Amino acid sequence: MKIAVQLDTDRNIIGTVKTNELGAELQVKLFENKGWTLVQSDPAFSSAESYLWTIRESDNKLVHKSTGLTPDEETKASLVELTKDQLKDSLTKDQLQTALTSLTKEYIEDKANSKMVTAELTKQIAELTIKLDKVMGIDPTPKIPTDVTSTATADGATVTAK
Image (cartoon, rainbow, N blue to C red; front, side, top):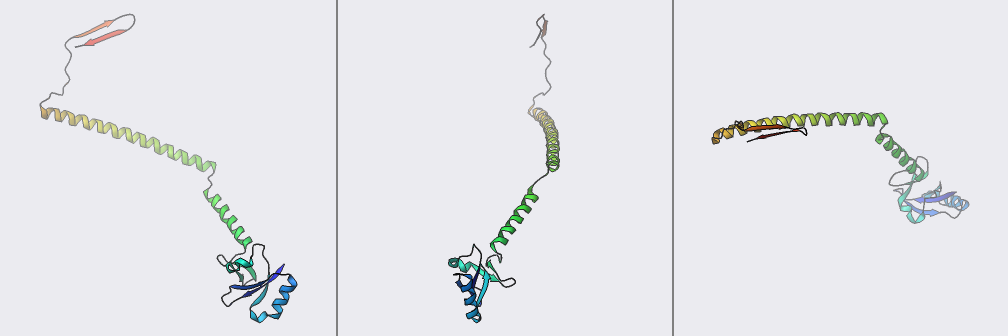
């Protein structure tokens, strides 16, 4: 159905005739020089919220001022963006396997590096402890036990040192 819409100089909608198509056509013919134009109605258009709408000059369609698009065009644009986002964000099985392999490799390398660092730090602490013991007058050389006994039985072996 067609409706008559009146625009001011800033293309704001300031009047509508939605009674019927014949009434809209008559309004436009009688007051064409007063800014009235005939347009295809849109189910989403409401006279009460006409301040949110305007008429696109290129094709004479009701469009939202904020986007310059009809509600159908806004819906299509949203679907296109959602589809693009889903395609951009989705990973294929191969991409997931590659990412997992890469993360596993990094984890293994980090763990190996961590063990090497721990071993090096332990070695340095042992060397510093020996140096500190020498400075403090402590002999860091382990003492050999003088009394060692060893007993072997059918159940196992027992070794004691004093």
